[in-house]
Length: 319
Image (cartoon, rainbow, N blue to C red):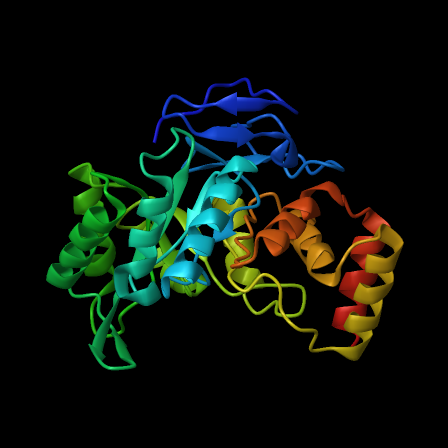
């Protein structure tokens, strides 16, 4: 993926070199080389690894169905619409449909727009029907990366994340394998998923870590320490399951109240809260619905004020 130009247009339709049409307006905000500002109506952008400029609100492809044919065609339409609406970060994984999800994205979007960053994950393999296991053996990781390259129809994955740390293999060996593939030009940037602060620090001794993908949302703050480490190091934090059912009655009440004030849905407010929570947070909500996709992207326009953010935080903390 090429570095972005320092200038970006707004509110117009642009056509990339590969012929893809893009509607820029939902993701307005000038590209930045440092932490993006969080202004009303704009989620801004973030430079993953210091160079891959992406929209802060991405798209998680896990929920896109690959069969039957009519649902597959609908899924392709959703992926294409996400790009048309300005999404420049799409997340998938080796284990999503055991490769079928990656193939679907390639069918929908290849040849890829220059500014689109596709992130995939390796490190989990299937040992039998409906059975999976952590697999961070170097030879297996290399094989999984080669499979991802073939399925995505590319010679280089812009962001390759280790889906889980394999407890049977030293972290240095797992991350070192990805570093070697990076040096060979097959990986642009390296990320990790579901890790602790200690594991992040250990991995950083072997390679530069550009992203972390941990579970985190308004009602689940279990990885605050990891988020703090990411902020300090300028590492992108991609919260999976960014929209979750309320687990605290007080939080649910506050969420509903603020949604009513903003004429928004609760999921939109949860996404807006994440965008306001930290400049390194890049939510990747997923959906198989065109309407839901467009609803999610509208969250970039909400711009929660400080008082609303505090009400949400206090309601959840004192539940």
